[in-house]
Image 1 (tube, rainbow, N blue to C red):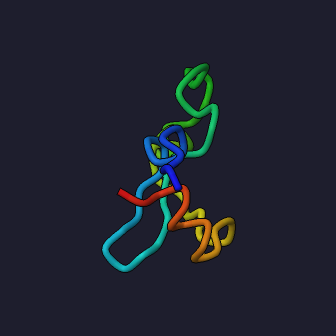
Image 2: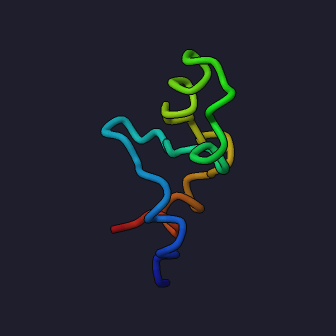
Length: 62
């Protein structure tokens, strides 16, 4: 089975097997946001609860 490239480019698997990536829609229109919320938008979030082991191997294999 082929790897889903659109998903594999947006997310990455950490050394311990966690799936992390950016939330959608966080790069634009941030001028009115406080500095702390601007910085929090740069952080990766965990997508571990979306993926079973089968889905991880399908979408994120290298």
